[in-house]
Amino acid sequence: APKHVKLPSIPEDAVQYQLFLVHPESSETEAHERFLQQILQNILAELAPLLVQYIWQHQPFNLRYHPEKGDVPAHLGGVTQFGDNVEDEWFIVYLLKHITRTFSDIAAVVCDNDGQFLLIEAAEHLPKWLDPDSSENRVFLYRGELHILPNRTHSGEAGWPRDSVPTVAQALEVLHSHTESCLAKQPICAALTKRLDGYPDKIQQNFHRAHCYVPAGIAVVLSKRPDLIAPAVSAFYLRDPVDLQACRTFHTFTPDTRVMTSVKFTHCLYAQLQQQSFVPDRRSGFTLPVHSHPQYRAHELGMKLAHGFEILCSKSGQSSSEKEASVSSNPLWRGFLDSLKKNGYFKGELEGSVRYKDLMTSAESFFRQSVTSTHRLAIQNPGQEMLKVLEDTSYSLEDLKNQEAHLPPEDSDAWLDISPQELERLLEERGGRGVSDGTCKTAQPDEEVQEEEAGYSLIAVTQGMKNFINAMSSHEGAEIPSSCLAQPFSFDPDAVTSALDRLLGSKDEELDSDDFEDDDEEDDNDVDEDEGVQNCESQEQAGAEALDNLRKYMDEMDQELQSTNIGRSFTLNNRVSLHRCCLSCEEIQPLDVDLNLVSNLLESLASQAGLAGPASNLLQSLGIHIPPDHFHTKN
Image (cartoon, rainbow, N blue to C red; front, side, top):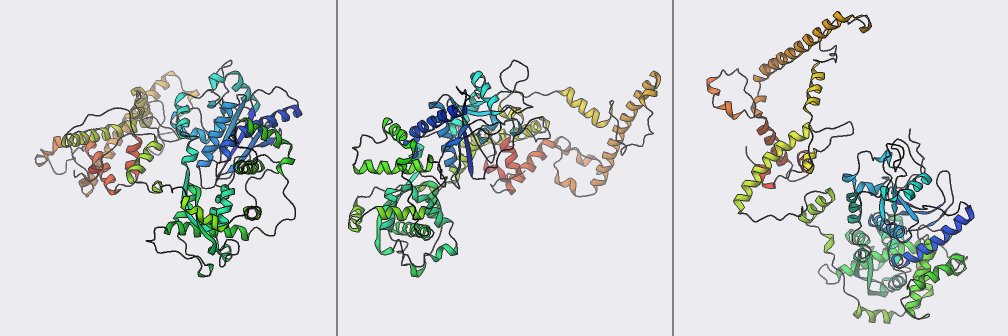
């Protein structure tokens, strides 16, 4: 039986990642730790240009050394809580792919509360044997690609048996010795690549720059620490009545110092701030112009931001008498700084220039959050950090007002509004169906297209449903017929006949005692050959009797239902409808099964009024698309 190692639970909005050495050169603990610490320094220096500019929703990407524990060898790892912005999670996946591509001796494992969520992205292409129970310690990012330890069915093959769980060390050994065999199939890798398409340029595309009318102190803080926008928006978004008590009168960010400035958000943060309706307390001093004012949105956004910043500062408490340790005292800082310079982080700026100092401040802030031994998973006291920035920075209100004429233009927020067509396209993309098959269709007259579409749809519905009913399924759920997926559909008539025989009891299977009152049979060991033949004949006779009884029962049920109105809900076969007048009114008429099937499905689609429902979901999964105009077809 698989030996499962109980892992610590991961919060619902968090992602956990681990970096392992695929083939450690030394088994000595101290040497291994030194090597991993050196790799940590190199990794952070490599990622610094990407990470310093990034704005995290809640917690940043972070790595620290983890000593060996149980079956898990020493490694680098961390956990990031991404809150409402799932794009942070996928950015981390991109970072891990980048790390494993740059450092070829590193393999990464990443999971969240759903487990191996990378496999979910390529669920349609996974092999049958791979499921949540059989994927533990088998899925790695290595050399920039997804690798999966294959299922080993015979000794000597590459991989690991499905019915047991390898330790991390065993899995890494297989990954090292059979790298090519472990590389995931092309469709699986392609699905993951598609999800990460656009990085690292997507970092900039995920930002939204908007003009905000804010107190001068906020403009100064955000110019030095753009990352503090995240806790400020969260403070406003998650405010409660106690928080708003601090905003009756503003002590830190007074409204009479407001200036227009450009603020950099992420899409998630901007949506959270912009979409909430909020009316400030009359005592706060914040007033808004009329809705028709051209700068109404800037005033509204600035008012909301001011409330978030004021809430954080009200929670900062008294300034601590203990000074935060300088990053220069950390033994890793010097090597980290040297790596930054080698990677061109300072972009040729002269040491001591304003731009150089700003880059150094960002690097120090990143180093504190990502490297230090205390290892802050988030900004522990953002209010206190805001006050510290204000304390260390001198500014002129007049200069800030003069800068208003030179602000960069705002970004369009049209991305907040999604048309029904765009939503349908996105859903089809996520479902992996029907966006574009790469084929070019020739133009046809409208009437011809409608006629062809209608005929195709009805035939496709009938055949698709028949294939669905005949497809193989199991206790784990119904499987989509392979014919709908453009693959050959295998059908074994002998297996179906055998199943029917077992159901009706015409073979060796015994009939249920509830169906027939048979005498108790004697023990098979006491039956001689003649009796065996008699038993076989009696079983065949019983099976025939059972079939006759079933037909008789169905005929009687038809006769009884004929006196009700239920028959009027079905359509009779057209071949016999012309002869109805010649037949006795008590004679049962055959049904047109295909027509009834299509009619009922179309009626169900019409009742959904264009929304999702059982009929549309089933047809969509079968690859059948009924045009909206056909939902109200009269039959």
